[in-house]
Image 1 (cartoon, rainbow, N blue to C red):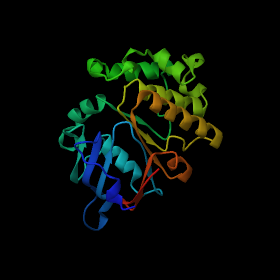
Image 2 (cartoon, rainbow, N blue to C red):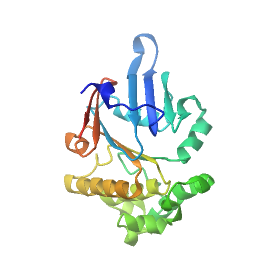
Image 3 (tube, rainbow, N blue to C red):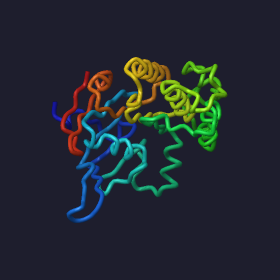
Image 4 (cartoon, helix red, strand yellow):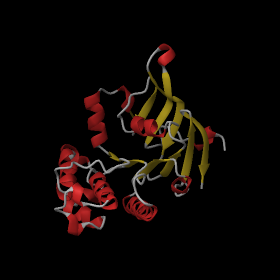
Length: 243
């Protein structure tokens, strides 16, 4: 399938990259991480960014999450040009619906599981009256129960297994009531059985709460679980496959 055939227009999508180029350095040292990428994500969609290491997957996630500003092109988030905002304004925009799960759990090491989730919930409290769904009513303990960790509320990250820590990270992301959940190799540090359980959990929660899910992965098996797979090579979209 032609890559452009998988795109939707920014006016109908939740978030969209339009002609996005990201480059670092100058002259002979210039490295192009993304090259004129067009990509749109629809509300509630499950999409995978697939490619080898260095293909641009993580950079796409960073652009979608407002963590990286493109050199060229624009990023439209719910009809707002995210890429034109300053850092503080991008942070406020992220608080209105974008959450991230990293390859490692990236938990605050001196906070318990409960405190990690509570901190995320508190950090987005300024936009609480603009949250879209019933997760605004979930307390941190409720969210940890959703991910099967009601017995680990007082555990520090160092006392958790890799799979448990990643489930805390999922609960933390849910505390932000995302409309868009960005996952960067979320099972990369887990054994195969634990990885399957974590992926099953993320997908079950996505069905329940209807957020859009974008997962960057080099694993063809993980990519195949998505409704649409966008393949990247050398910072370019080279193919789109819909199931």
